[in-house]
Length: 384
Image (cartoon, rainbow, N blue to C red; front, side, top):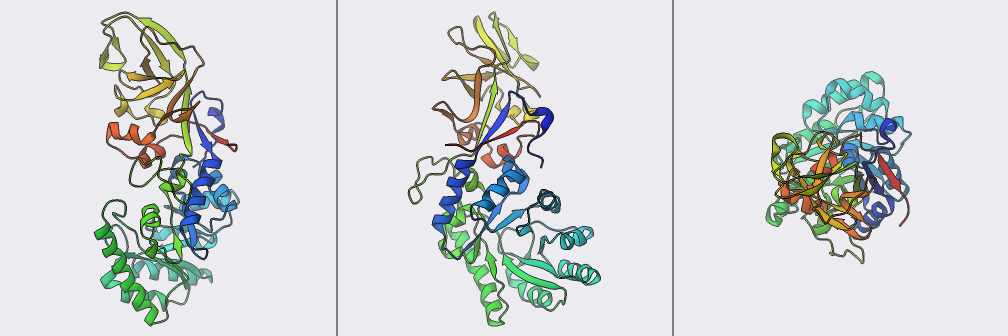
């Protein structure tokens, strides 16, 4: 969760984080919802690799009301850093940790009657109230009580004397890809809300809309939305760089860069890197970059990835190593030790879209962003 790992602070490999781009993406969210709808920014997994504390602080300063994380440890880190805003841990809880939730004023997801009773018992023992969000499963089949069995869960939780129910929520499983199923999930969720309303049990915070839900299902914004990937500059449906939302386009927040570390001329028929998965066809120039899978640059990009050096795109060749990889710039290519190298993002008017990189290896931006390790320093840039 630590974002500025000081021993690596001056590494040539670095992730540049654009705070103006982050604010731009948040402004898109704000433009798509009604003024009275709250925003829970999803900052789990080190804010999708961008830096948990720094990103949370910036978002809170510009209108976010809540922070959503996956685990207690992420919430405790934010509290340790001085964040006092409401935080919800959205994942399933470990009963042994309930006391820490309550002691640090962290809001808890209850996903079953047993969980609610365990939360209540600890809160009662501490002489405090636990703040809870009820998780309803409408089709994700991850955690939560099925919508058709939710009534007893809700009634039981509300009758516990040491719990305050602040929210009820569900999670959209296919909002970016399947409108029919998404509408079915919303209908299921609404059926739960209707039963709660009849009993005067609706809590102030009702939430189901993730990034795709925010973009395409305004009738499911309820009283709070939970943007994730769109805050970091990516469209949940894939690569749509020119799609405008109220005059703004999503802008990737992270640019991954490194520098040329070594240059050599290599003769023809020479194997490059482990197991010689690439063999030169003719004499060529090979440069070595100080970035590898130990930094989160996937080994699956071996002989598939490309980088930009001095405005030209060149292929990654050979197997990507833990700490280094090689690039073939050809006999006409130019590179000098210390030259900046674009891994993904934008640099000097050139770009390597992360989505296109992901297509080459069958993954998604979420995964790549989250796997950029802490030995890659995050450099926060607050200028256009």
